[in-house]
Amino acid sequence: MGGHGGLNILPQKSWNVYNRDNRLKVQRDEEQAAREAAEASRRDAAELAERKLEEMRSRAGLPGSAGGGASSAALGLTTAGHINFFADIERAQKNAEHEAEARRAEAKAISRIMPDLQLDRSKSEPAPWYVRLPAQPAAARAPEPPAAKTSAPAALLLRGAGGSQGELEGSERKRRRDEKHEKSEKREKRSRKEKHHKRSREKHHKRHKERRKEEKREKIKSSKGSGEEAR
Image (cartoon, rainbow, N blue to C red; front, side):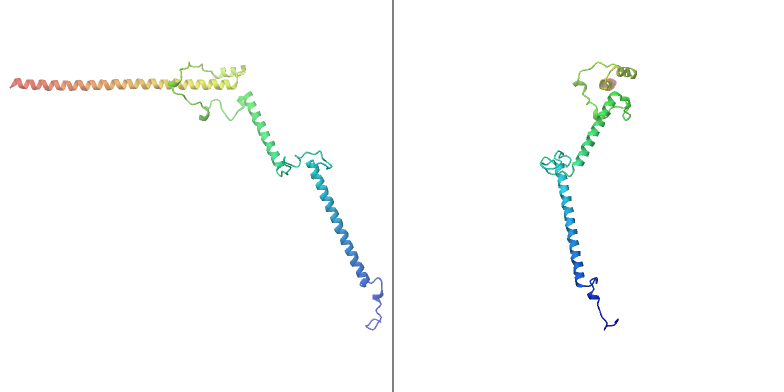
């Protein structure tokens, strides 16, 4: 029974997996499972796309969407309806500029209320050259009376009494300008005096030379007259 001449009843068994009917059934089941998986994946993709589209419409505030009250700024739409992909960066930049402006205003207020807290600038340092007023020639401006010098305690009293920082700086600039004008006048007077002394010395030397020349001529004339008398 076990050799080639024995009976082979396996193909007639319904549970034989290699039967033609069983192989066709397995093939049909696999194809059906593949179709069902493809259909399920297509439905999932369609649902995801519909959900994303609905979300974008709700953000854009388009009519007919579920969340039509949302503002277009959340999606970054421009006035023409285009999507701005740099809306977040622009909003962050505007926020940074606003914060910087607020910090500058706060620093100005602090410097106006408490100027002694400005550690980056000393009151004894002169103002830089690019903020100084241009010096006018002495002939082009009228002489100004010398301003009273304000000492440091007086300046503190003025500041405590309500004197503004701008007034103090203006008086300080005026005092420096007056000092500079006074120094320039002194230099001009000194130069005029030196020029006068120089001209007087030159005149004296010139008169002395002329006198010596005249004396020499007189001596020559006298020597010639004495020689003729001797002859």
